[in-house]
Length: 184
Image (tube, rainbow, N blue to C red; front, side):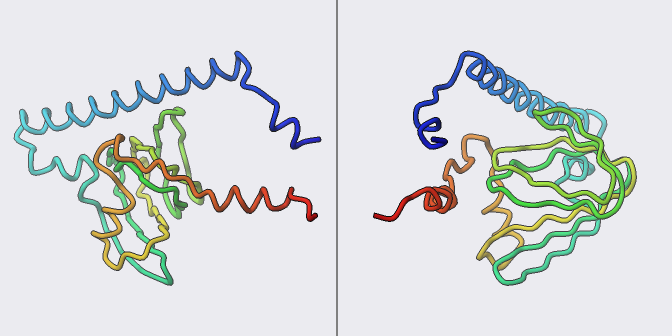
């Protein structure tokens, strides 16, 4: 019976409105992040702080370590108190762990103040604004066959939202569907 409900259920008006509201909010958030990055660049140029721009944009970081293990890339970064940055645009889902410290993360879903220990999942197609309240140790783990941090960066991030992979892991859906199939 549950399958027949799934096959025949249609999107109702409320669900459609919520979806369109979400997409509009996502569009506005991305525009604001772009405006923030542009304003940051202009500020640095006007105040002769261009040398600091990569740090302010989160392109150069505090202490970063890289490790590889059985098809996984593990990146640990220590971000100093007071740092405000814009993350890269993520192209793949991956877990992250905040082992020490406190930060605010602003996404299209809103502002979240996080205190270690904490873990979450970064979704493909997301970008974040972050502010570090207390020095943070932040760890990300990525499934990859790449063997250098530069190769991993090129695989797991993109420069523009139009480049975000639309590919979905259909094998996961197939595994769930197998549980519902009845043998002849």
